[in-house]
Length: 398
Ligand code: ADP
Image (tube, rainbow, N blue to C red; front, side):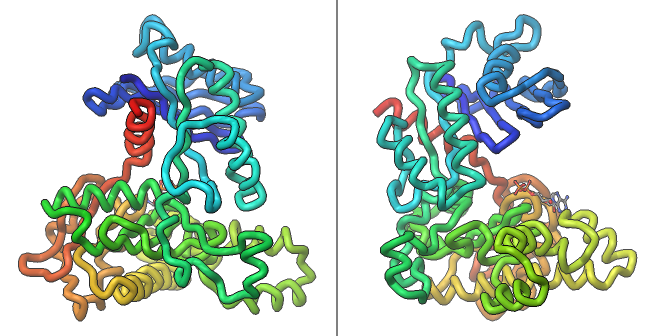
């Protein structure tokens, strides 16, 4: 079965086509600047060079048409016709409390996604636009929604509730939801496979460390706590997001600087994190360079980042009453041996003991714990698209 996986942002669209018989990626790429001047499509067949096509791309429907034109192109395509696609998997950010797993999209699902717009105003609208555009172009295949929030629906109420007046939960569904669920689930499953043990017996802490970053406690295959909350702002320090701060700081700054709520939102989401602390960059490669050149704020930002992750690991070991494995994934987690090492430093009391030589790896599955370490430390590259494609096949085949 050939499956198209789509991930729509407000002005972008990422896509991959899988042959699910072999779970191989036939082609993948992205469309950027949709609805803006200078739009383009990038396309890559297998491991070949990337092709860039510049075009006027006023909306997501045109973007998907262009994707199909590339996929069926005579010289570099991978399909004879678009009809070879038998199902489409869509990444959707927020399903509120409605869905705890992936679903085949129907009118009820679309209505639920619209209801969740107020919970994810930046993410759900482009996801909906992408689904509608794809349905229009492929009306005869099943479309599946795979939600970032679904995996975390197993959190117990004492972990997902905020200690605010209960009515706010009843009225507005203010609670913790968690995100990156597809990634946390994928790497937890891979960790169990690498360790050769059933997921249902393991206590795993998964650290998804990219531009957005979150930690999840996965007990016996179920998410029991995660660091992101009502929105992807809570928890870890991120590229430009603050993560946890005393909520009183927000009203304090609002009063001092005379900021509107939208401006505070922007400050916490776009001006903060390691970027805000360092004043250098949100990218850890630039921070490492700056720190090596003696920039103290860049060094401080990285130390704060590692310390916050370490604290969450400690908290989640306590939440689960132990930990068998800690998994690192996403841009930073997969590519920075020094950050993994710094996060693990000080966790020896838990039985965490990384092997520096084994840890010197990038972008491939490795158990980098030292011989005899009580807690395994693993590097597992995430693959959200494959997870989406797998869920899509499972649902379509019924
Ligand atoms: P996103 O949340 O946008 O999907 P990614 O998972 O792609 O983010 O992670 C992007 C981040 O990963 C970059 O901002 C950068 O800080 C970090 N990163 C990527 N490669 C490296 C590297 N070689 N060394 C250190 N950090 C890296």
